[in-house]
Image (cartoon, rainbow, N blue to C red; front, side, top):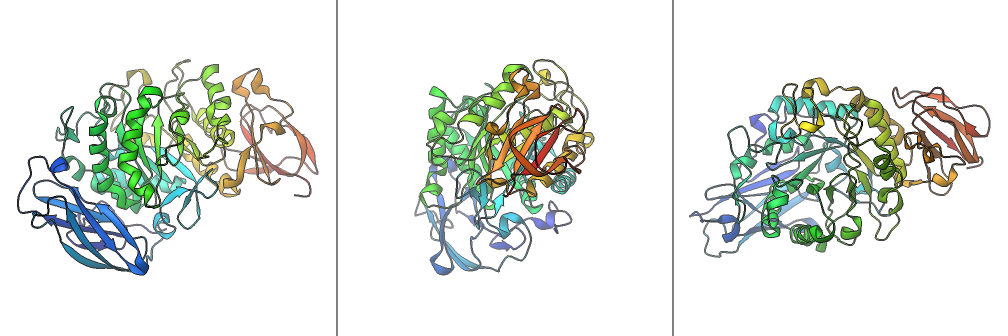
Length: 536
């Protein structure tokens, strides 16, 4: 895979009426003759694009300060495209009725989001896939403060490392929030607590870093509005202001083909759900109605399942959850037996992804011990096997807050001290993600379904730390079983060609000759067993 030597360098900035073949994005800027007191509310500017074979797209432009409005558009097909602007104020000279054209040459690069198209739900509803049907395995990394805080060269190094380690998506917050109350120049994403005023300069400082995620072949997954505490925008903003903020962010970054996280770390159940339902419909409803590819989820608080309240919302294309940072029996059993493991077949079915399991080097809320690479592996493999496999997210306690030096993350004293992001980049758990990716790439993972019924004995019934997770491919395909503590695996069927996979090293070894239904791991560590039913 080839990438720009430095996707954040100044020469990558896009100017007026330019098509960038590397990221496959057309950008145009329009200058009005006058400024508006409240341009976000007083004015709307949309751009209609017409391309080959009657292809049409309507795209919102975004205000970029002063008299300037911009539009970014990633054409779904190559060829000649023409555009025309439409302003809510027809008298707005320089904005209304502007037209032009550009040519999008056939894409010649190797970025997955461009070769295979944007990501949405797969045909069977249980996983994610590109527009051309190619499966998309969500292997996210948590860099909540990365886009907000990282220096350009550091961000470039981080993204290249994560791509090489096998990650496919980067989760990042793009507004101020309690762990990033203002940027390096003392500014916020918006001013006010109601009838907010967007600050374009804040987002201008983020643009190159969002673009860099895509330039490295990773899927941007921006959190539009963090919502955990009274200090966070999603907690105190009204639905009207949430809509204003999210629409602005979507208009600014949709061309990078992201997988959106509308709300971060929030409560989306019961009465709290209504604001988010209203926001999701207003921000993403038109895209759904036009039947265009879309990937949108909500990142909820820990041990929290908003599926019952949001399942029927068309704009919510996949479910996410946070098994979080506890380690008592109740928290472990929630991951093993809670809604992610029991509700996956409820119609309409949607992919299910754990977007926040145990973070490496994070203090447990219960034992107050540091989570190690083992805890990370255990949470990830459990998550991938108790629901139909769609993906999982990794997190490190030095990466998510983007720590330049070791210390306690802002407003997160209870989580423990973090190492710097540089110390964390090659942490043991992060390096072992490549082995997880290797294992699932060797499987027809979109067809894996939970298969706990194959287990004759479940040591997790007595102690959830010993819970064994089993899955198999549909129609009698291969079986995958994860045992976290060296317990033997006893099955109701015999397997042939059985092999052990070491999640620490990625090394395979035989699990015995001939057919068998009982398998003892090589040692007391965590192992995965892969085998086939005789005659399959």
